[in-house]
Each structure stands twice: as structure tokens, then as C-alpha cells.
Length: 116
Image (cartoon, rainbow, N blue to C red; front, side, top):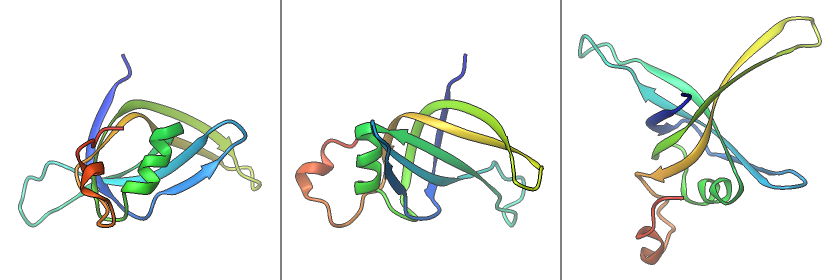
């Protein structure tokens, strides 16, 4: 089974792009690691990829520093750079994104429906 659930804060504004067939939104969330000592805060930075209406909503309703809850699956890959180096990738392909925090410019009616 390949299923992951993550809650974290966006590290920068989400990037929305359109392919020939669908919208694609990519963003990175910082997910806190369990800490052993209060002074040592650590986080993992995980790239999230969304598609379609979810991608459009993520671009519209999230922003840097806001929290989201992501349900999805892990996808790994690799590619070779022009210099011949192999780069390994690790992404989460989101099935659903729940907005824990919202952009301020949203109407109250839209805040009632927070799952996309």
C-alpha cells in the first residue's frame, strides 16, 4: 500500500501551470520532525504535486506559511543532468488537500467548504 498523510506549512507560494490537458500545482511543505530536545527543531521539506481542480484551488487558497493537510501517495523517480549526474526525486502526489489555514482574501462562504 502506498498512502501518505502529511501536515505542514508551505515554504513559498504555490506554482500553478497548465498542460494541454490539466492544471498542475507544485508546492513544498515543511513537516516538523518529532523533537527530542526542545531547542532542536527540525523539518523535512517535501514537494507536493496536485492536478486538476485541486491544483487550481491550492493556488487560489494557499500561500507561503499557511498549513495544509495532504493525503496522497509517494512517487519516486530519477533523471540525468546535462553533466551526466543522476538526480533522484521524491514527491507526494496529492489526492486531497485540506486547508488548515486560508488566504485572507477569501469570502466567508468559501471557508465553509475546506476540502478539495
